[in-house]
Amino acid sequence: MTKFPSDDMRMDDLTQLKQDIAEIKARNVRVEQDKAWETSAARKLLIAVLTYIVIVLFFLVAHLGNPFVNAIVPTIGFLLSTLSIDAAKKWWIRRR
Image 1 (cartoon, rainbow, N blue to C red):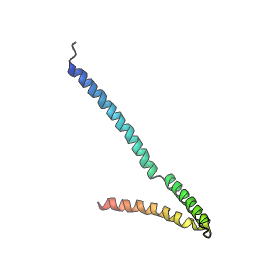
Image 2: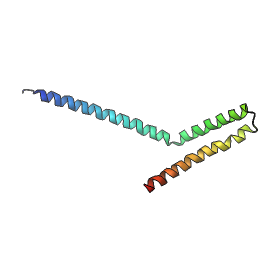
Image 3: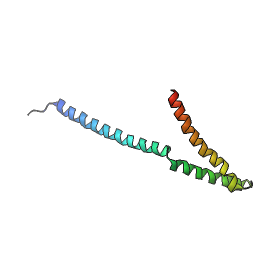
């Protein structure tokens, strides 16, 4: 059977398409993992803990009173803002 140049070209195109699809699927997995992390409770908790630590350190350096207790307020504010953002997003999506 005689091969025509267009047959090789089609095989190259098919191989390239398969490679492109594999790359898109790999990217989609990464995007889904990033989205899962962005909305995870673990991320919110980590940011809350880091926020608390930074504010305590600031209060200690600034010699402000009760740094371990007073740092709780902005940390709770952060956590509440993450809850309200989700609610606002759902409301906004429904309105569109």
